[in-house]
Image 1 (cartoon, rainbow, N blue to C red):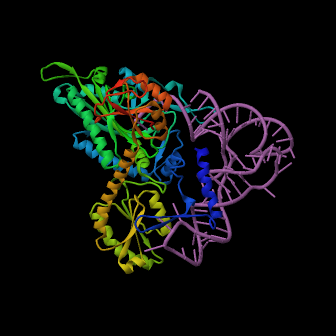
Image 2 (cartoon, helix red, strand yellow):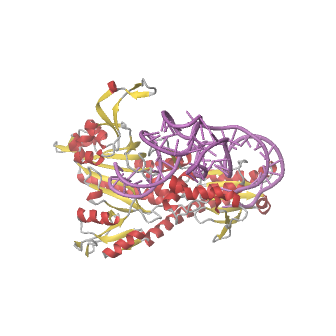
Image 3 (cartoon, rainbow, N blue to C red):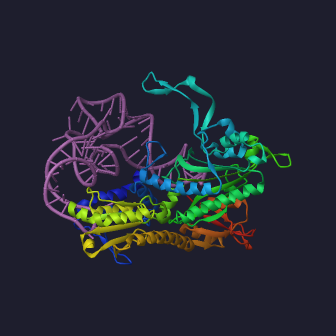
Length: 527
RNA sequence: CGGGGCGUAGCACAGCCUGGUAGUGCGCACGGUUUGGGACCGUGAGGCCGCAAGUUCGAAUCUUGCCGCCCCGACCA
């Protein structure tokens, strides 16, 4: 990180000395406002260094920071507030589809993890293992692991909970009357990744994992697809993020699954981000953990399983999908603060006068369910606040000063378009409620337009290699073999993101081998 | 695990080549002037210069070893 940030940070540090002569640029916004933007505090530009831009935005918008523990982040209050809003919305959707929350242990005995063979193999390489249960004073100072406190059996810190949960389900499921069993858990998990990035890939992360058991294959598949639908709806309606729904190729399938469904989103740098997965697990786990039930015909059967999850990676998707060079852009539905009101005053008397006008607006907005902050903090000046709330992605900003009091107006600024205009105070709350909806829609439409502009049908290998460098989703024919997929990955770093659920049959030739193909699949480089 | 880079104040860095008062900017504290797009001036606090050993009269600086972090690859939600 250090090497990369030198340019950016170094630049800011030089600024004060050069302030007088340093060029600033103005950009005239579409509606009325003119922005004067001093570059001194600017973020790195997306166009120049996307990943540095991402890292800086996460830190400077106070979302998260690297902790003292390798690969693990501290999610800061502002970032966590966004995550909580995501949790709330998702949790409501889970409940509405009949699920209940429960909690299972952090530790998975090694013998449990071993039981489903593919599952074990898939996760073995990235497990944190607890081998001892006690420390003792080290004669050379500090503490040491007590060699006498070795665990009989190692405990794995859950990389996912299928094993513990299906071991539990064995005791919960006896009859078809016990099914379906629809459980979700919110928790943290650990996957020992080689390289980590805030929110996108951390050693420990927060997620939710749904684990359901069903009496029939059809029911389980229906559940898998239902939850994929929930994820897609959440992504589109809340994150304002258009997603492709599809199936993973066998190579990319979850370890232990018969079929993995996913939602895939396109980020502004042209890379794909897997944003959620829903797995049809067949009877694999029921067999591994001996979960049988008596069906209506009084016959013993193995239960059918699904699991599905989304993680704090969604925060990464949220940031990368919408934000700009001024900072975060939050969809109103997930913004911890939807509206900020900034008074512009010189004295306590002026502030008091402003507040008499602001108070009813605050009340009206709160009554309408809008989260609004009146920032009369005297320690910062208004200009500083403008920049700060832009950095933090607050969707709507109102500024009100003495000029407005005289004119009976208020300045309304939109974060998504960076426009501002002056409006009458009269009826402002109602206007804002409508504006928040408009912003939510606009952000989604913008992201959708971006994805459409960056989705390409490609039919030749040369075109493919060329386009993959430029980024975006590539729709291409594939012969359906793992070998071809592997070779394409080796040559281009592109993977099959998904086989779209809504793809129509179309005869064609595999872009790599020329073998016959019935359908286009989606290729991209991915996070 | 392979290849690069870096550890000096809360943060970002300079100083090291050529050994001898520990420096700059941001931030922080106090005071004043300011306040419609990241204010300015003044004063001040803040350091085991990653750790250990060595060379030397003397080490942030030279040597050796260790530890940690970051970036690029392989692995992944």
